[in-house]
Image 1 (cartoon, rainbow, N blue to C red):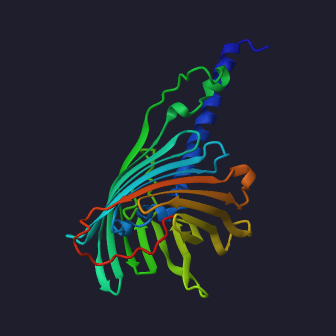
Image 2 (cartoon, helix red, strand yellow):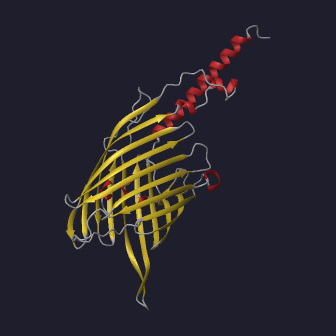
Image 3 (cartoon, one colour):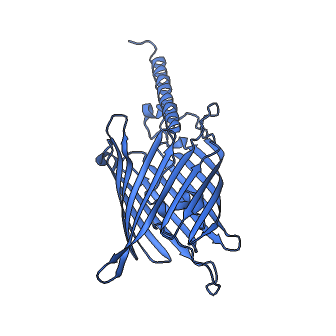
Amino acid sequence: MNPFPMTYTLKTIAMKRILIIGALLGGLFAVESQAQDLRFTQYNAIPTSVNPAFAGSLDRARLVSVYRNQWASMPGSYVGWHVAHDWFNRELNSGFGILFSQEEAGAGGLNTTRFAMQYAYEVPLGNGWRLRPALQAGIGNRSINMHQLTFGDQLIRGPQVSSIEDRPSVAQNYFDFGTGVLLLGKKTWLGCSFDHLNTPNESLNPTYIDPMDVRVSVHGGFRMALVDPVHNKNFGDMVVAFNYMAQDQFNQMDLGIYYDTQPLSIGLWYQGLPFGHTIEGGTDVDAVSIILGYGTDNWKIGYSYDMTLSSLGLATTGGSHEIVLSATWQTIRRNKPQLPRYMPCPIF
């Protein structure tokens, strides 16, 4: 019999605390070292989140909100909400944009909040072509909610009991800069963007520096009218698009095709690297996505579902859901003559 049962219990509690806190910090650093920006399947609906050069690319003001629940069936799924507003000023021949995002990952409430302002200058090239170099500057905040974590004394005494551990707020603020360029034509677009150019420190440990990796995106596509050759009647447009993204050792190619006929849009997307392979040697296929959109010239709603095809499996992840709401409105006087500004990109 142990003559000092209380001492034994205290040692056990202390050891469990050390193990749990160590696992927590190790997992936290693992999340930091593999941090990636949340990507959207319907990025065409909120294009300024990919490239600031899309700011003011329409001849109307635009307001977009998108919600994404990634891997909905897994505990501590990745949830994100972005809001973007952009408009074009003809007197300055410039586009302006505002971007706000809130993301939460993991059961511990790892939160990332960003706010950015965007500026794009439009250079007319003739025959409907436009070149749009752009800049983006913003601030970010990364934090973890310690009150959503379970500590060792709660496991011993019961999770319903408040922990006696000190739970200080853990947060990191940083400045963030990016740039991009976009070439727009009547039926074609091609762009490239670089985000986190200043590689800000996003570490939640004040003694540890974890620079954010630069995110590179190359994107483009074309629009083609579908015409009935017998009756010479247009029955919609077909849009083919791609978006290649790279951040640190992670990269992905999204390939999509849309059938666009107002008020309905239907899209099918492939996510992965067609000629790439995973570490295990298998084909690098992440997901296949179905997109449905409905709306008018002034408002649109879109929904997409990502079916996981990777080794995680659809039964494990539950797939990913995404909902987009967007509205556009006129900002210039209609009686003032203006040159046409084409926008070939799909809305979803």
